[in-house]
Length: 158
View 1: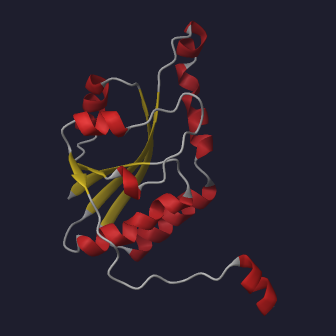
View 2 (view 1 turned 135 degrees about the horizontal axis):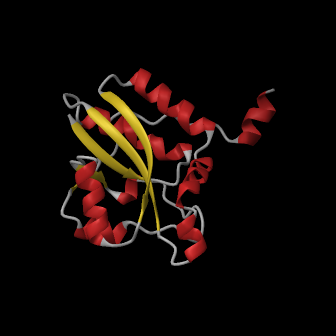
């Protein structure tokens, strides 16, 4: 079983890498952790309101959760999918998080959908490079990609 960390902005497009990951590691079972990183504010008011972090889950749409359920159903090697947030910007706190979550590898950022969610979002690239974890690089998909017609073509067909 491998615990894979996938930095994300919780866009449904972030899930497109899962098919390729499962295809390239056919005999491996996965626990996937989709994560977004936030700085900890230095504002006393913000620090007193740490319990209000549940608001961050508003960034995760129902479409994302539904797509995660479809992935678990379609790929039995995906045992679980977790949505989480990391609060901090230092390497030591990031390593503590990785150890607590028993993370084995991090998906290469070029395979992730990763835009800032707000002004407190942290670019994880530096932390990932320095944390010492294996970075999973995916190859191009072996299967032919399904071409989706443009919106104009769909309207003309109707």
